[in-house]
Length: 489
Image (cartoon, rainbow, N blue to C red; front, side, top):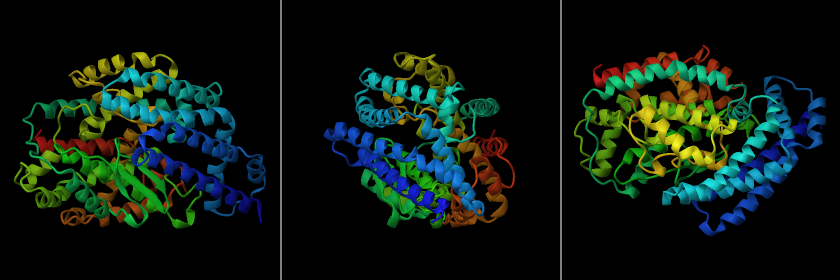
């Protein structure tokens, strides 16, 4: 056995254990009894201790030194393993275990505090999560920028300064487009009650319409929708609101985008570093293009309108065009996951600035609600009415995902590039979408991006798929054309 073979065998076992840890997280948010939270925190800490020991095993360094890669795939595998090893070595084992234990406990406390509209009950554990993540950032940064060190977990080689420049370029276009649209009469929304069980039936139909393989996945409900797993076991969740079926519909399509990326990676990469999405920005490009450019398109919503009437009868709008307008209605709202395409990135910019301030030590947890509410009023022009519509709405900070939020907007930028390239290559796309057939689009994405997994770095992944480096211009052009048409600007 060569050093490369030994290293890949060891890595495969480590990644299998990491999948088990992910399954425990899925169970905690879907099926776990509420009273099991403390025990689950200990289970997660114990498993993280084993994983950290494997990721820092001295034999990994020896195998990396001795391995002689042959070909692009082996070279890419070693690049990922070396990066993971070097990062893991910087983080003390007791800190890794403490983070796993605390974030497991914090997730349950966040869900309860959100339900109770009680930020004060959540603040102590959030403060502990923040303290531990700042310690981890200090270990990783080794004198460099703390936020960049955390961001690198989700978008390798990306810097906060790059994201700030992207946001500065996007913001004026978004603000101008929002202001112009909000001056126009708002399209009519849906009306009626939408049975939760029927929503889940429709969600299952939509998941399959977008290519989600239920033989290797499942759809459940959770407080906050998410996708979990890779390879042969990729699970998604959604949520229902009997007054707003779009919450379920578009959360499902969004998570299907994530899941299909994982399901469509070349099976030869299974349980290896290449066998998972290369970054969260690239991952979000898949969820956002499925949800928005495909799922909210005029062609697809024409088909979806018929499905909605079949499932729910009278939905308050009577034509395909009125339904398309309702799906894409630009309106004020508190919730990021329910935001229209124009305002969504403004929600991300708010979180990006606040979490950078927290990691830098410039914003304390106790001051977070006031800072959030003040910033929200300044950006959106109205006041947050309750914590679940403010800083308790997202699960991310409870589970320690500082540095994750900006990848949503980066994913939107990537999705804009991919959509422009897709439209250029697949000229009859709307004809297929109008019948509920997403295959021309999803097959293109599978071939151009998904099947390759982590073979290339994030920016090269998008460049390879689109034929040019990513920029925000295609997204701006898409949003301007779509909403200028919709609102007759």
